[in-house]
Image (cartoon, rainbow, N blue to C red; front, side, top):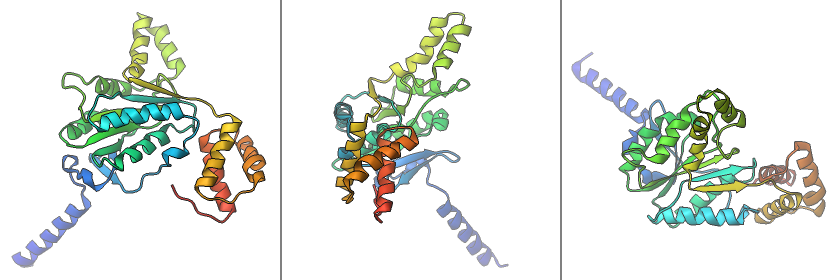
Length: 285
């Protein structure tokens, strides 16, 4: 093989590898998308072209919570003071949906507001992510969904340090929004175990519980009653123009939630998907 052919072959291989390799995170083009997911090995901010979310007006029964988080996010997007937020409470009542819906609503008129999802198991890499975001001109909602910690985990210390900011301080262009079924992000038996085994029980328990205290906003989500459940279903039917009978909107919907042993906005949405299929319709968020 001649030197020229060898050079051409090496060049082709190098070009192919370059196409396959993601750009370094610090070179991420944040104008390419409104939402990203933080992934490791290698560190990458992966753009999401289509985010799975519903409209803000479809989230019912949480009007005060909706208004509070919207105003907090708007303040942050405009460069004003804002709080980290912990959305906690009943499963399937719109915690993560609210975060994503508010981001979409505000980002329609503010292209600099981005949302980045980080998974619980990737929290130890949080410092690396913050170093990248710190030098960017955009503003970021750092979103961790369905967060909780088990007995053997110490990842909460990484999040706690990031919320405090340490010596360097939390980046002014980053805010944390976390959802959890638990108000203190940890199971009760974990806190009680700390109390029973510690030399000074109160100090050890405070160490665990104080993680939640780092969030300036605590927004609670409560279980759904039957009237609200049916109201959510009717709202979805109206929005997606599903021509459903009154029986479908009452007795069938009630039977649906009874078979699942739960009543929530998520169960209402699952019934809507079932109903749309039954009516030979396809609906998208």
